[in-house]
Image 1: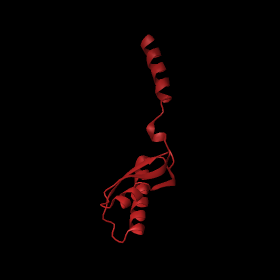
Image 2: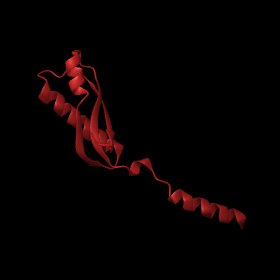
Image 3: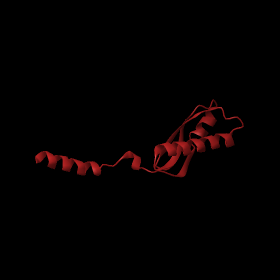
Image 4: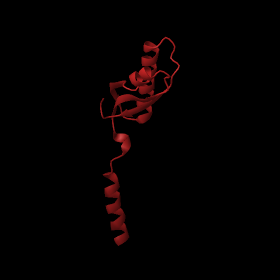
Length: 92
């Protein structure tokens, strides 16, 4: 009987556990650029966008990758640098 009670109490706590997938990703940032010119690198690494409402990280990264690609193609005639991006719900 004690084992059943312990299992039941354990299951109650598992249901209350917050999962990291419950986060909503609303922000996209470029955190690293491989631009050769320092001014371009600083400009790239200051880019941040909000407005996403993605509950899974995979979709948020797809959105963020598209934002960074659009930025690079709009900003530079030839987009030769690559970016490291980050998604969060922290804002810019």
